[in-house]
Image (cartoon, rainbow, N blue to C red; front, top):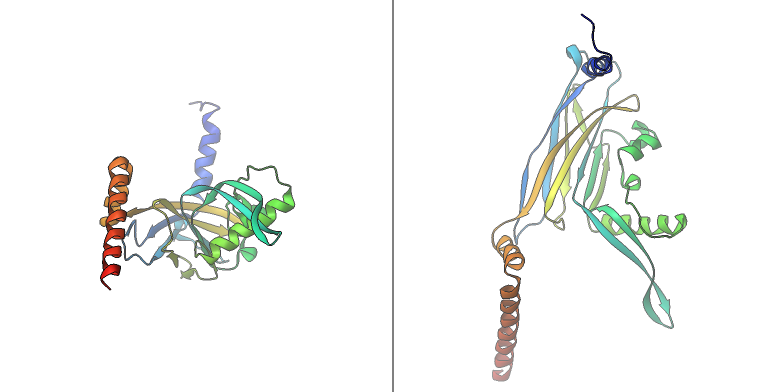
Length: 252
């Protein structure tokens, strides 16, 4: 029987994929609920490496895990002192900055992959593709990007933990990444990359949902669905609290 010409490349691709190891990842929490007492979460990313025919390579492989939040459009402004007053000067806008980014690896990234591979898979906060939309020159964009990274690192929203992924018997791996109390609600991804000889040979993704619950969820839904009534209620509460504070002050 003659095999159609277009099927041959697909068969070759499937056969080559069968020779590559596979990842079976998981995460300790698929849903994270934000309440008034939410102080952050500690997520465990773990899983197994499945090698073809159970044959492990002579040289141990490396694991990189990345926890990423929803992307945001953000404008960074630089302040300058003019006549003794701090005013907004230059600015840069980034179209796709992740709201949260945390990475852990079995070794420092520079020892695992080269610069090009790290940039392709965004392995490291300095490799994030932020998609600048302004017309600033490269030096200005680098300065603003460094400022954005520094700001989010200080707020616990950009995290790097090289050398913290534990690999047992060359098959099982685990890593812990913190989820900051400042995270926004939305869909997050936990990505796992298997690297051999500087090449990403397998990747897998698990979804994590961060949502509000309890009173916070009720207030968010009310503000979205009944915005007019929500606004009137907020004004009434503010006026009532102001009147009550004044009445107490007059009696003291």
